[in-house]
Amino acid sequence: MAVYKEDKQYRIREKLDEIREKAEEILSATFMFIMDHPREAAAIASVAVFGARKIDKYIDIHRETKLRNSMIYDRSLGMYWETKRPLTTNQRLVIETRHKGGEPYGKILSDMRLLKR
Image (cartoon, rainbow, N blue to C red; front, side):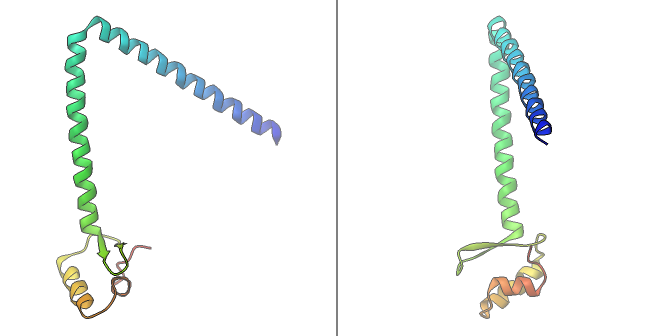
């Protein structure tokens, strides 16, 4: 059993060494490219930063949309209830009318079988 564990640790270290070597090769090649082609490197960097900003904005919008569509905030508990799927308009209306009647969100969602477990 101990031999297997040592062998596994050896393989992990070996794999990490391979990854480290590849990363060093890529890094040195990148530095050489930057030194040889500074204008192209600046253009590529600006495009990469612009793309990263667009991706970040998309992720934020997607996260906010998911939060809005599949989660309900309960002010009395100060927490979100997550639903199995995005709610339809009719389901939202039923939930809001029952909540205004005094029922807690957790009971409403579990009765409608919408609560994610």
